[in-house]
Structures are given as structure tokens and as C-alpha cells.
Image (tube, rainbow, N blue to C red; front, side, top):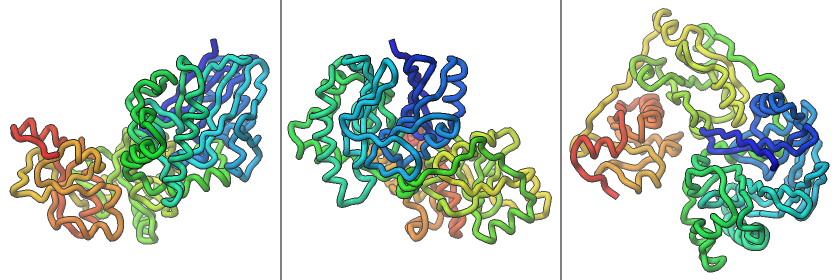
Length: 448
């Protein structure tokens, strides 16, 4: 029995897989940029990391294949991806001899044009399918990440790939997808990280579509918005990201240096919990609380070419912050405000505040719901206005009310929105809680 270990990034909603292929060797499917977890698992198991295998050019994270190649791995990737660094390019039907086992590349274009899935085989016996974004539990990955004019053709390619290449595999074959629940690359995947061919044949609503047109219509109706950083990472991964070996630390920056850098165009990102931000923060700083989904919102709200200066609490994990930022290609990590907001305040500079509220009245308050449109549609406070957080960048800020009450599911996204509103000169307050909490407290029904 082949041992397959999943390593999950809960924040981005993705899985990579460490596979023991025998003879004290392992391969990694769709590795993330931080390769320390793979190296640690391999060392514990006495394995050498022999191969890094890519299913496609990723838009949502920086690949770790070059980092693995720097420690001895051979990169296997779709030939059509045209990678600009040393690798073995594969095409549909190609079989890679792993020395006992083999890896068969199967053409599964759709999520991306160059997409390959991989069937791990023991002779003729299929052991596992690594499906990338072609097939997910209850879903598939989106086809609109390349260009608007390619969305429909790619959806049709995916329909054919699913029916011609994937559903021809045995029903009991385990499927290990890269994208999953929580990934903006996914359409509507359920909470499971793995599945089987038979389960998806029986229960996946997209596979139940009677024909290609119905499949395309159903798939395209599930597509919501996605972070703006997706538009550049495919090319970063094609050209080859910088190889760090060891990730850098955040240098401490004195107040004067922070002020100078911000004046020169750096973004000041406060990653403390929202309660701390509300109590006192550097004026015009952007609140993005450090949590598993931090990277997604950093990538949605901040331009990648801006230097980043951070404000942290004393007990927050600097290493995790760097991991998440580098993981989506934010390389200009200038440092952190030395001593945090206390140093800023002690220098005689003012702090700004944001009001937190635990009650709100739709008849009185201008409620702005910054969740995704699909979340809003599932149930919202009557009269609440839907403005996705990702849309509140640049000229979209003009859509904000002068004194809005921002809400989301827990408060973090609402605080990000409020910090943008305050930066534009608007008063803002944040409701702590969800639409469901409001309904329970008031005894009123949510609108749909």
C-alpha cells in the first residue's frame, strides 16, 4: 500500500501530497513555496525528496517546485506550461517510470489550458488519481482565470476531459485534488479534501449534467469573484519564483523610518486582532488580521509592487506572516514597526480608533455587508447593502456611505473595510458578529 500524506493549507484551501514511491524516495504533488513541512515529513520517514510534480500553473499560490529542486528534486510539469526553468515537460498519456511504480499524465484541460492529472500506477493497477483542479469533492475548479473569452471553451474542454479521461477510471480509485473547500479556485467544493471516482459519479452535481451545454451553464453560474493577485501568479510560476532556501525575518523599523517609507508609498498593514486595532492604530493603516486567510485578503487589497510594513502584537507569529506573504508572491517585506503601536504613541504621534458595536438597527444604521455575494444571498440583515470587501479598492470606495456599519461573519473582513473607509475620510464602525447572530438576538428573520 502506497503511503500518501496530505499537507493542507487551510487558509488558501489547498492540499499538496507527499507520496512514498519506494526505495526511500518521495514525490510531492503541487508543492507550496514553504517546503519545510515536506522536508520534515521526509526526514522523519527516512525519505529523499526525488520529484516535485505540478498539475498546472497555479494562480493562487507560489509553487515550491524550484525550492525543492534546489535540494535535489526533479521537476515534472505540463509541457504546455512552457516553464522557463529546468524541468521535465509531460504530455497527455506519457508514463514516468518511478522505479517500481509509474506516474501517468492524463490531459485534463479546463481549469487551465495546460492542466494535467496524474494516475499513480503499480503496473496496470491504478493506485490514486491526483486531479489538481479537474475534479474536486462535489465540484470542479473554475475555468475563468485565464481570460473572459476562454472561460466557455475551457469549461467545454473540462467536460470532455472529465468524461473521456477521468470517469473512465475505476469507481473505487481514490482522488486527491489540490484545490478544495476554502479555495477561491474552487466552485463549490464540499468540506472533504479527498474523494473517489465512484462518489463523484454518484453525487457531484456537475457530473450529473445531462450534456455539455448543461454542464457549462451550471458551472458558469457557480463562479464568483476571486482575489486580484490571481491575475499575476501564473506568470510568476511560469518564469520561476525566486528561490529563498531560508525565508527572511522581518526587520524592526524605527518610527521615523516607518513614517518615511509610508510617505514614499509603502503600505502599512496592521495584522493585530481587530479588538486591538479598534482600540488604537496608526492613522490610515490597513487592518488585515493575521489568521489562516490572511494571504487571500492581502492579495486582494494590496498591490504586489508596494513595499509592506507591518504592525504586530508582541505575541504574534512573525514567521507565519512571512510564510503567508511570500506564499502568494509578496516579496517586498520591508519590516515591522519596532515596538508596535506603543512606540508610535510614545513618540507623540496620534492614534486613530474604530468603534465596535454589538447591536445595530437596519432602520437607523447604514449597514454594509462585505461578505461574498453568495454568502449575502444565503441570508442577510434586511436593508443591508452588499459590497464585497474585494470591491472596496480604489474608486469603489466612493460607493461607501459616510457613516457605515460594516459587518461580515466574525468581524475581520468588516474591520478591513472600515479601515479603508476611514482612510478615505469616512466615519465607520464594525458590528461584531454575523447575520445569524443578529437574527438570534433580535428575533427577526434574515432576508434572502
